[in-house]
Length: 131
Image 1 (cartoon, rainbow, N blue to C red):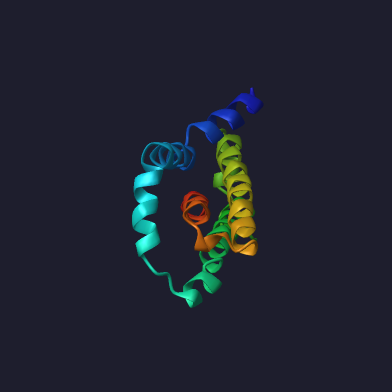
Image 2 (cartoon, rainbow, N blue to C red):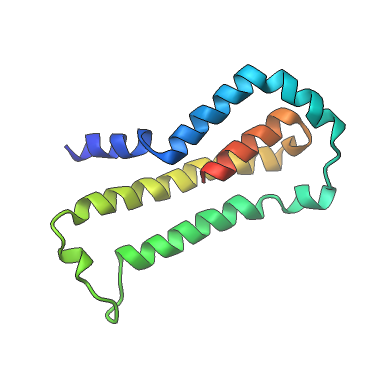
């Protein structure tokens, strides 16, 4: 039962819906958008530091989630006594897994210098926002 709940939380989420929506826009309007992308010049410093955005979001997600899921002695443990706490823990685990999985394409695109091409910047943007 928990495995199905993990799948449900992963596939029925805003992050997954955003990825599907972004992929559909790319498939339907990619060529049209690429024509305008070629006309825009991108600041080289922005490309150099672009990786900070998805890394900081993933780090923030991990830090905030860990403080909620593993409270210290000062924090109330009422949440942990809640009968449906396992469902919250599933959401936490899927959120962390999403952050890590969605960070990997961003790192790959950034490392190979793909942010100078439309396909690379679209892929980076898709996964950075979904992170």
